[in-house]
Image 1 (tube, helix red, strand yellow):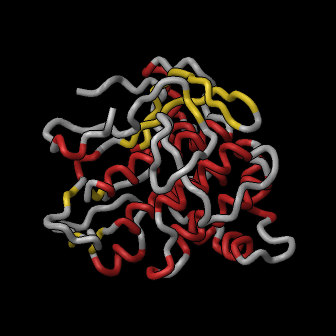
Image 2 (tube, rainbow, N blue to C red):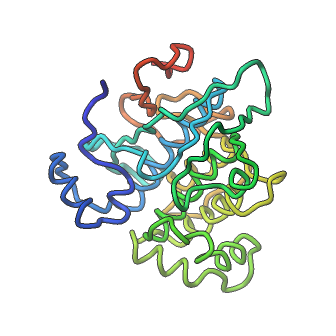
Length: 281
C-alpha cells in the first residue's frame, strides 16, 4: 500500500490528453496541469536520484518511463541560486519489474526472461541483446527528459529530434533551433538550461554503448541545471557532483545547492521488496 499520488504521473502532465486531464481531476490535483520547466526538471531529478539509489543496491528497474514517475501533488519550496521555487516531489514507481543482480557483479546486467518494454523507452541496446543494465535504465531517464523538453510523446521522439540533439551536443553554430523552439513552447524552458540538458539526453540515449553518460553524472547535470537554469549556463556535463534533497551525496561529494525543506524518499517500493533496497530515511 502506498500513498495516493494526487499529482498523477509526469506523463499525464507532459501530454495532457483528455484522459490525463480527467485522471488528474479524479485524483483531486489542485495545481496547474502541465507543470513549469522547473517542476518538470525537479521531478526528473527525483526519479534519477531514486534510480541511482536502486543501482547502488544492485537493483535494475527495467521500466523507467514518464508514466512511472508520480507526483505527490503537494507543493514544496525548493531553494535554488535564482531564489525559491515551488515544486512537487516525484517518486519512481512500478518497481514490479525490478530485478536484483545475483552475486557481486559490477556489470549488473541481467538477461530478460521475457521481452517487455514501453514504446519509445526501449533502449536499442536492450532491443538488440535482451539484456538490461544500468545504461538501459538510464536511457529511460534520457527519453523522459527529452519528452519534458519537447512536450511530445515518446513514440518516434528520439528520431524526430536526432539532428537537433546531435548538432547541439557537437556545439554546431545555430544548432537545435527546432528543439529550442519546442522547449520554449512546451514550458518556457530557458535556452541555457535546454542546451546543457540536451547534452545529458545525448549522453544517455545517443552515445554508443561504451561511451554512455553514467547516471550519477547525468543526475549532477540535472541538478546544476535546476539550480542555474534561468541564469548562467550550468557547468559542463560530466563534472561536478550531485546531492540528494536531504543533503546526502548521490554520486559525488560536495553540494549542488538545491535544497528542499524536509525530506521524502523518491522511491515507491512494492510489498515484498527486500529491506536491503529500502531508501534511507
